Structure formats: C-alpha cells, structure tokens
Image (cartoon, rainbow, N blue to C red; front, side):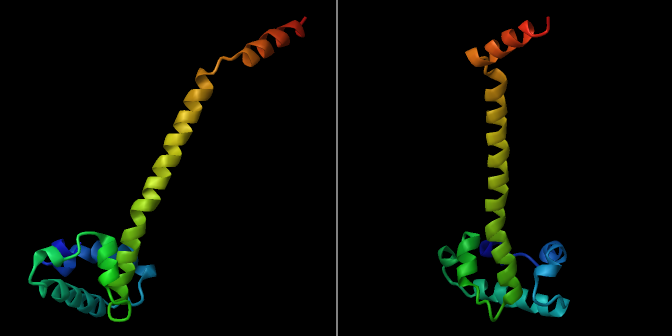
Length: 122
C-alpha cells in the first residue's frame, strides 16, 4: 500500500510485474520503473501521513489510469484478489458442512430403504 511504498524500491514489485505481465499495458521495464517512481513521488509529497491511502481500493481511486496504466492495473488486480480467494474458501467450507450433514443423517427414510432392500434379496 502507499504507506509501504514510500520506503520500498522497484525491485520489490518485480515478481508481481513478471506474474501479471500479460495483463499490463506495457512491459518495458523502463516504463514500469518510471510509473513506479511517479507513484512513489505522489505519496511522498503528502505532508500528513494520515492522508496517505491505507487500503488498495483507496489507492486505486487515487491512481490516474491515463498517467499510470500499469500501476492502475496492478492495484485493480490487488483489489479483486481477496474477494476471489474468500469466495473459494467459502465454497469449500459450505461443501464440508454439507458432506458432514449428509454423513451424519440417519433418518427414517434411509433406514427404511436399507430394511426394504434386504427383503428383496431372498
């Protein structure tokens, strides 16, 4: 986030740039580093640290898509990643609860089917 960007360097985001290379507008390293430096300068210019964005969505709202298209894309990806991760975890959690419920269900219908099927084996 912008609060952490002030003391970081361009090398710290190179893994993200490599991973999301196909999503970026320009993969020229000089262009990317230029955008990064402009993004850092924006946040360094704030005199009051409380005005610096704390969350990815706030940083995305502050980012000019025309001036820093690659930074905007990275921030956009950052804002949607937690949502996609949480939804997958919720799905697995729901499936686990459903499977547990079905395993523990020994209702009258299930017992009746077992008894009735034994009558037909003779």
